[in-house]
Amino acid sequence: MRTVFDFSPLYRSSIGFDRMFNALEAASRLDTAGHWPPYDIVKTGDDDYRITMAVAGFAQDDLTVTHEPNMLMVSGHKAGQDAGEYLHHGIAERTFERRFELADHVKVVSASLENGLLTVDLKRELPEEMKPRRIEIAAGTAPLQGGRAQIEAGKRAA
Image 1 (cartoon, rainbow, N blue to C red):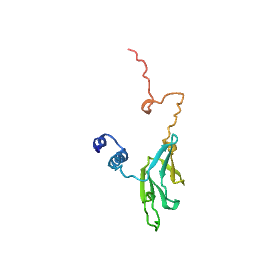
Image 2 (image 1 turned 90 degrees about the vertical axis):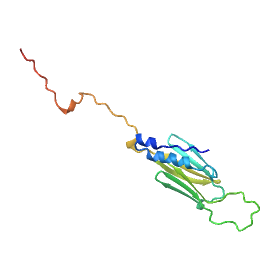
Image 3 (image 1 turned 135 degrees about the horizontal axis):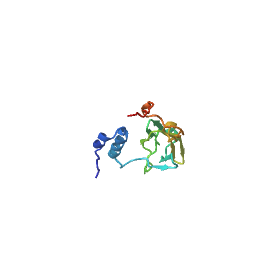
Image 4 (image 1 turned 120 degrees about the vertical axis):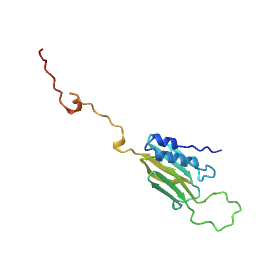
């Protein structure tokens, strides 16, 4: 049983979250059966992540890792097949393409292939202007209201 969420009421009261709502809708449409190759996503630090994919049978030249804005694509394509007759073919060396949605400011640091595992390291790097900063409080007089000097009225004799 698949549940479909309607995010349209949220569009009326939120601004700038379009990309997030689109990602949630796309995730709800994904078919989870038959996804290959298997993978892990691990948070290795406050702003560091690692994706590890089991790509047994694929050589470095058979794999492609592409980083586009807010998207990481990993694809594999076997160049040639053995000419022999298989009595049992249990190693899945089929062509694949796996897409990962990335948050803003997430960058690919490195990718490596070792012992049939493809590891992609990612890091979120916030620009300086987006990091929290402390505002110094100046000592002295407070700014005048409305930028005008206030003139005190003198006492009047009756």
